[in-house]
Image (tube, rainbow, N blue to C red; front, top):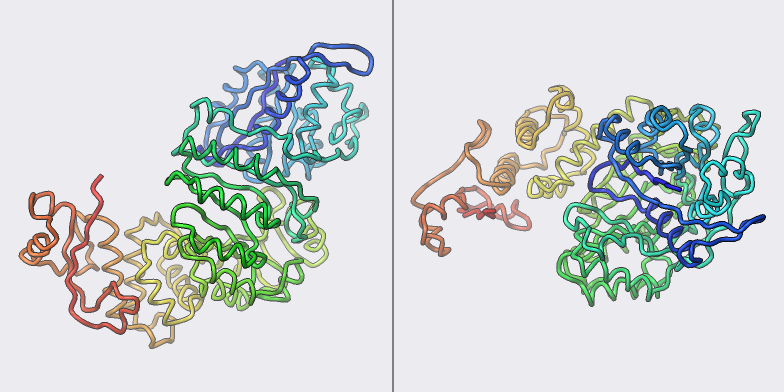
Amino acid sequence: MKILLVSVNASYMHTNLAIRDLKNYADSYFASRGGVLLSADTECSIKPQIEIAEYTINQPIGEVLRGIAASSSDWILFSTYIWNAEYVCKLLPEIKKVLPNCILGSGGPEFGYGAKKYLTSISDLDFIIFGEGELTFTDMIEKSCGVPQNLLAKLNDIKGIYYRSNDGEIVFSGNRELIEDFNEIPFPYPEIAEGKADPDHKIYYYESSRGCPFGCSYCLSSVDKRVRFKSLERTCDEIQIFLDNNIKLVKFVDRTYNLDENHYIGIWEYIAKHHNGKTMFHFEIEAEYLSENALAFLQNVPAGVMQFEMGVQSANKKTLEAINRSTNIEELAEKIKKIPRTIHQHLDLIAGLPYEDLESFGHSYDFVMELRPDALQLGFLKVLNGTKMEQYAKDNGWKWMESPAYETFSTPYMNFNDIAFLKDVEIVTDAYWNKKSFSYTMNYIFRMMRPWKFISAFVEYARTVNAFLQARRESYWFEILYSFIQLEKNNLNCEALDKNLVYDLLRYDFVRAGKKGNFPSWYKHNYDKDRHRKLLDENGLLGNSRIGFAMTEYEEFDYNVLAEKPEDEKRYTQLLIKYDII
């Protein structure tokens, strides 16, 4: 019996944890029994051949179809999420055309919580696994007793399955119990130990716990509040595999990582003690619940070891209360401030939540920017099937996309134009803050005035010059920001900004980004070759003058642009900017 577990990922760099867990759990289960099982009525030999296949949503469907068809599998199961649901829906009917006898199934949060919709609309789909899949998948293989087509007659005997009855009715076989001992899940990436990993170009996802005790109304993780932990010893052994093989990025998918102090600090301690100088570990945490012991430990974590993703979502307490999140934003802010800057900090906001209009969202934006995150992710409320938010949105006048990704169009507090405006704010925030190309300029601007006031005024200006309707290379963002700052009437109504200083900082951000072959019209290059040579000599770089000039740039400024507060240091400054030559 040949089984193919398929994931269509958002990009090449992603790996799918779910299909690996299903395969490895089932392989381990049947191997421990020698492949011989006793079914209800007979003894049968079961040695299923389970393979995984990963594609991306950027590949042509025909290309993916050829790969799946080449497997000649008896069962084909898809892992589905909001980012690949549309693609999978298009692909499923085509599979039955080239493999007419195969059995098609799916699982994952998107099809699982939308099972009736998808089984009704896709006639070629035979069943959907709901919820945690390892036990259900293994039970499917066992009940079929090694004969692929036996499965369809046994679906009602397998908990955790949606399927069609003989009269076409959508039937649910009942909830499946959860795995009690999380240590039963094998390490998901045996290929790493076999030397078949792609350490520099893949993100490896990992979980040391499942479940979430919190009840955020928009999140599917709030449906199951039971949290199960992998043992600390087992987790550390598996972390060592990533370290030994120099994996570049490992993302923990624990829904709230910092729940059990002994567990989460123990993992951090192991990583810090055994770190290889390369692997970055990503954690999604609730900063408000970091213990004092945790904060004390983090003070000694060097750069390049950990990064944190922290969901703020909103600074409006009425909003937070409505979505079942803690309203103690003061403590949240204090805890985030105590996390050292050696740890990359990624903070999230969600637009489209209850009681949040543009003005309120602006205050939330300023609240987060005051914390100076390394990245601010501006997301948009997704009204997901099966969440408390789904019913709330239906009852209170939300409008949202009916197909994945279910993003909000309007709320009682924001109309569609408001949401569209925030989409442009998202683009601008990513360009001017998250990518770090404008760090010196934006840090000054955000020190002198409300970030929201500046960003929203800039978006209004950018719309007048159709900035969001054309290709936007990094050089374009420099040009348009220069134009905006030079305007006499730029909707800022603020005299706080020194335009000459902004121009100096903008020039420095531009020139520090890399060696320029030529300079754009907005950029005044104050170049003096003799002074350039003198600085090369002072820095010991004149041994080979050709290389010295090639790997550096000389520039003059009216301010000390490298100062923490350059507005306080208006003085002539000569800089030698050094570049990495690869």
